[in-house]
Image 1 (cartoon, rainbow, N blue to C red):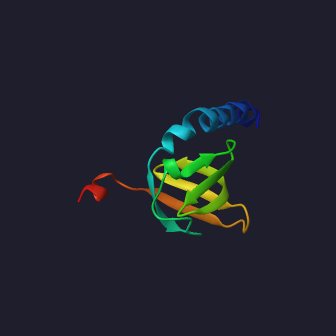
Image 2 (image 1 turned 135 degrees about the vertical axis):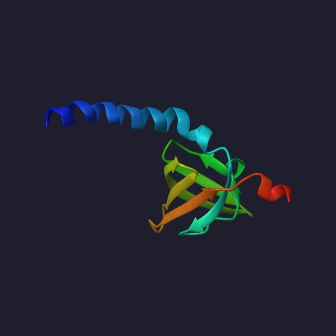
Length: 100
């Protein structure tokens, strides 16, 4: 139990540091829809406006979608639609797909 009490604050510090410092850099990619609510396919970092570190707006084809940013880990972008509270997953697309 004492080990958990010691490890938990360190783990929370790492997650918060990652969220505020490194997450926006990982989002700089082209994302293809995988499952959930489709907010445009593909979406790029240029289509995403970060309101604060948890809320984002995606503008695609004149339509504005607001959602919560759950995370961006291991080549996946996880979003939660703010209206319907449904989960959406986008996967990072390889750049060479667009070159062919």
